[in-house]
Image 1 (tube, rainbow, N blue to C red):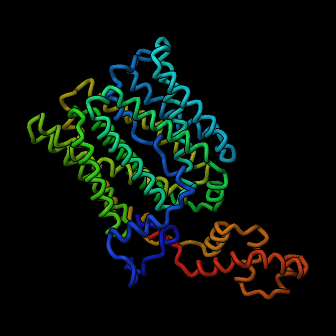
Image 2 (image 1 turned 60 degrees about the horizontal axis):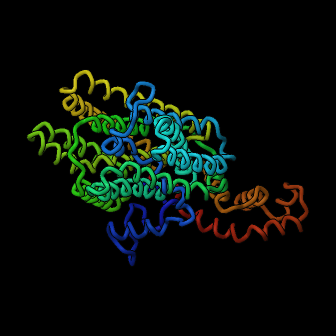
Image 3 (image 1 turned 180 degrees about the vertical axis):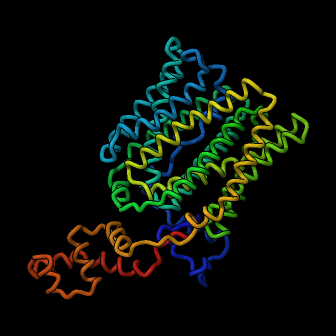
Length: 465
């Protein structure tokens, strides 16, 4: 999927060429993309509570995670995390989300401290369970802001920052002196960043986008949900396989893959399709290397190139936020969040059950599943492109109203602007609106700066390419 021109710097011509005098190439596109980011939106971009936490927790916390209700502690915490995401969307309305975010972040931080303090050892497992429930709720709030407060380019950078945070953490926490503390430190950084961001949530940042008309596009949502589930299924299955000891090499290789993938993304005109292909090919190669190479070397090489798995994280969350922001109001948003994160529990259960019953077949089943999902994605690519990558036909009036709302025009100013754009005369507008010419002129005067800016912006194409 390519960035919508009204959400990215106006630097491209009709076919995506860079105008003369502009910096060319991927580096120039990256600089231009950076210039489109709004500093005030940073709290909505740091979605660290949505980081893939439990694969990162397993190596360092599995020995400290006591069973809960007779089940593995880490697995139970994963269930609580997924439930928390759905519950927060069910229980809180958008207008009260900023207040709920502040309270939830403070409660989650308190539960985290109670979980890691050895003084509370008798209730530590339960503190961990409720902490995971709270962190899942934070993830639900973060995803809501990610969807409705950010532009397309900001969503891309938000997912990329989260991935970079994970890979830098792998490098730092692979040091022997930090190995035993890696899990708590990783989670502590997530909790701290989430708390600081949630304290700056403001309703006006996301309610405006949420209130815009949402056309129905079930096919586009279905395409995005397929890739989202495919990504999670492949990654969850891969996490149950044996892994090499954490080394800085793994994190550094992941960063290298990350940089190469972003270069391709910006060099090829902001097309997310390449990131999706990188994910499937990288994960399939990781599985095949484990099958072909001797066990120890195969595991190490596979983990080194596993950075491609993070490209699936960027693509899946970016595409999901992209489609929900355009085609889903809050009611549909809640239903989809409940669906995808509740069914994620099943995606945890399946590889866990296979690993327990037929562990020798895990690698073959994972390879076959990844290859099958890749083939399905390739076969669906024409439909995927038709629904997600081509120009979206918009109703002209809806586009105009949306842009005026973005410019901050009041309801009365929007009425006046629409009449002017229809070519009506001053007196005719005043009679139609049942206001005197003086009041009409005053409304027009207060809106004229925004109307001038609107007229300039209205010359740009508003389409998803």
